[in-house]
Length: 103
Ligand SMILES: N=c1c2ncn([C@@H]3O[C@H](COP(=O)(O)OP(=O)(O)OP(=O)(O)O)[C@@H](O)[C@H]3O)c2ncn1[C@@H]1O[C@H](COP(=O)(O)O)[C@@H](O)[C@H]1O
Image 1 (cartoon, rainbow, N blue to C red):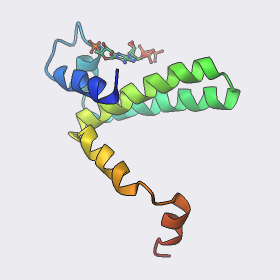
Image 2: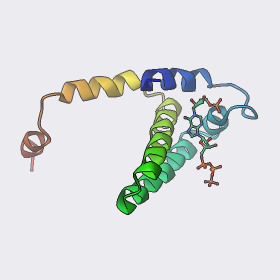
Image 3: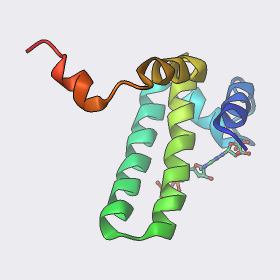
Image 4: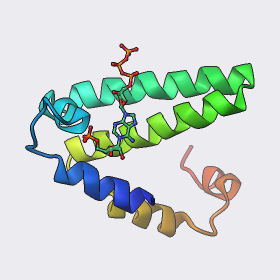
């Protein structure tokens, strides 16, 4: 399972029956609800990271990635655009990038 596979499954759920698909149910509620759910899952991951529970963090990280992809789908942002942005940044140190920002 790759993020591309999961993203394709999520996009295929657009317009599916919300009674049988969690993804379809979430997407039918609109981008704001999808964003709220992503935020909840991210916070749950943060809590487990701070607690140092690696198994729980693994599970919450999976929830967070899934809900990030649902939020992107709700906002019509292709995963490939996000990957292209990461590729553009490849090899640019975060320290160098921050130092080059206008003050
Ligand atoms: N990866 C996931 C995935 N991760 C989490 N979830 C669901 O996300 C929901 C959110 O979890 P919560 O416990 O926070 O849900 P909640 O009911 O709001 O709980 P509380 O906040 O009330 O505690 C749960 O119903 C999880 O089952 C997922 N649902 C689907 N997928 C993937 O998406 C595919 C399509 O799923 P459907 O759209 O449901 O067919 C699946 O085959 C999976 O590959």
